[in-house]
Length: 357
Image (cartoon, rainbow, N blue to C red):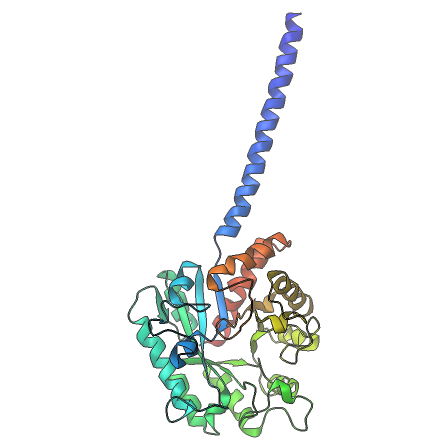
């Protein structure tokens, strides 16, 4: 009788220990998932925040790059885990410039970012990959300068050199108008709608200097001309997949494959009109596009290019403070931690190291 009681007690203790270890295992899995969800880093290849503040679009006098009511500011960016943000000097050449020219407006915007960064310690300008590494080691967010509208060169290669000297490290070749470099997406399939002779000269010189060539907004023919006349990686800083949403701003599957072949990159645009035919900007649609980018071009080309402060409408990600929602959605959709890291910042780091000398 006594031995039977001992046997029963031993059996119960074994089951209790098994239950304990099961609970510990479940807790560790939960903690690992929460850790993945809580600690994320981001590099975003496109926002229009700098232009919004410079031109005063929908802003109040008190709004600055450090704190404003738009989609992104430096304070929220830093607190949300950003390693780097690319700030576009957007030039609407179809409207009057703020100064004597759109080119001068771009130079003034570079000054605005630099002066804003000098006032606070949490972020710093980056001109190269080594600058980025230094800022990262010092726990500072890196700020890169870009130009969105290559037409401001107006056929003068010296302007490209001046922009480079003033910190510009990426140029979006066109916006939505024909310019001295080539033709925009909405003029694809017209005769000779690729790179113009000056455009060929510019992309070759950008490659020599170590600048990112950006084909977002460019025509289909222009995309393939960039591939023809350059040898290194180039990027689409803020674009989506045409197979999933048939907008001319989006990339075809063949383009995604080519970017993979060239070790380029696609920064996912959060604009609802590029994500879904119904125009809704949802996290689920973003995950769907990122999966398609990876399917057609490989994991290494998938990145982020939010277009914050350049897009409107109802956004599920209301600003940079919501970026973790996308990372969490990728986790829950079955992407591994290393895949999420690649999309959110590691692929971007690769192209910075490759191109920005």
